[in-house]
Length: 615
Image (cartoon, rainbow, N blue to C red; front, side, top):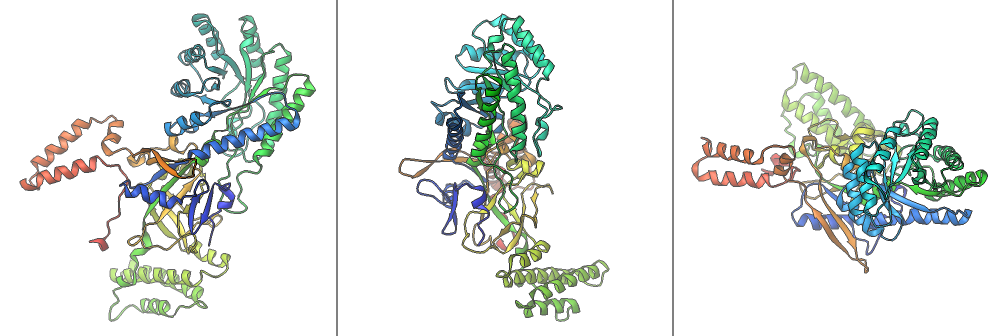
C-alpha cells in the first residue's frame, strides 16, 4: 500500500483510514463519501471542495509562531498579516476569511482597482489594507476614499511618479490621508521560478537614491509623518531560508537609516510573501527546507538585532503569506472517465485459424507467463510488437493481425505487472517506466491546475479510496481538453501509481490537493471549460459537517455570454435550423428542441464516456 506522501504534504490535515482519505477534523468524514453525496444530487464533472477550517488553522499557526518568537526575543514591535488578493479573489474564500479573522490584525492586500474595492467592502474595521502594484490617480483616489471610510490603509509607492500623484490628490481631497509605504529595491533576490521578484533588476521598488528623494519630497510637502512603512518582496514559494535572511539584513538596515534621517513614524516593515508550502509527495524531493517556527524566529531575531545595533525601535512586522494561508483549503476532485488499455480485453481477440507466427508466439507468451519468466516474456512481447507493426507498415499483415497484436501485448503487460506487484519497488518501477496506463480525467488542467501546465508546479495527487489496496499501474493523467499539453506524464523520479479499475463497473476519483492558491484565478477557459462546481465543507461544534456555498459550474449559455456572444441570437438561429431541417420529422422537432435546451443549460464537463460496449 502506498500512502501517496500524505505524511509529507498534509501536515496531518488529511489521513488515510480504512482505505479512504479522510478530513482529520470533526468526525473525520471521508472525502469520497462527501463527493458521492454531492454526485447523488446530480452534480457531475470535477468538483472543487473548500475546507474553511484549514484557512483558520493556517492563520492561527502564523500568529502563534510569531507571537512565540517575539516573546522569546523580547521583541517590542507588533505582528500583522495580510492576504494578497491576487492569490485567490473568489468570494467563497475571501468572505469566510474575513469572518474568521475578526478581532485580529489581519487584512487584505490589493494590487488593482477591483481588488481594492473588494478590500474596501470586506476588510474588517481596524485591520490593515495594503495597496501594492502600479497605481494611477484614480486608484490612489480610491485609497483616499478608503481612508475617509475609516480603513487603516497604506499606499505602497512603486515609483516617484506615484508619490507625486499622492501629493496632488492630498491637496484635492484633504484629510484624512492614507498611510504611505515605500517599496524598496533590494540587491537580495529569491531563488527558483519567482526569483526575479527581487534583486536590483526587479520590476518594482525604489533605489537608494530614489528613497532619499522620496524622503525629501515628503518633507517638503509636510507629509513625512504619513510615511510609516517600507516594503519588499523577493518572490513566491521561497524554498530556502537563506535568501530571506539576506534580504532582512538589507531591509532592516534601510529601515533604520531612514528612521535616523527623520522618518520617525516609519515603524513598519512589510516582508511581502514567499512563505513556502510543501507540495512534494515523494521522499527526497522537498520544496521547503525550513519550518514555520524557523522562519518566524529568523525574522524576529534579525530585525531585533539590527534595531538594537542601530538604536531604533523594533519595527512592526507585516507579512503577506498568501500561498501559506490559501493553498491547503481547496481540493480538486476529478472523476476518472476511462483507462485507455481497457479496450484491450481478451474477449476482443479475434485469432484466425492461421495467424502470423509472431502472433502465435505472443499468445503463447501470454499463456505461459509466470512470476519467474515475467520480465523476460514482457521484453520478448515488446520486441514482437515492434516487428509486427513493421510488418503491418510493409503490408505483410492485415488490420485484424495488428489489432490482435495490440491486445495480446497489453494483456501481457497487465499480467506481468500483476505477477510482479509483490516484488521490490525498484524492480517493478523500471518496468512501469516503459508501460504506462493512461487515465482520462473529467477536468481541465489548464483551468484547474494552470501552474502545472505553465510552470511545472506539481500538486499532491491521490485516489480518494482503495488505499488499502496496492496500486499496480504507472499512471499518466490526461484531461478532456483537445490539447496534447493537457497531460501529467509519468515521471520515474516521482512516480504515480494508480489502481487497475473497470470504470464500466465502478467509479474512481482522484484528489488534487493544495490547489487553493493561484490556481482558480489563473485558470484559463481553454476549450471553454470553466471553473468547476464548488462547495464548502463546514464543521459544527459537534464535529458534524454540512455543505455550504454550493455553486454549480457555469452552463453553456452563460459561458458564451461571458465571451460576448448574443445568446438570444444563438438560440434563435438554433431553433430556426431545427424547425426548417428536412432531417427532423414534424413529430420529433419538439423533442429535439427540448434536448437542445437541456444541453444548453448544463455545464461543459462530461457526464460519461460512451463506448461501443455500452451500446
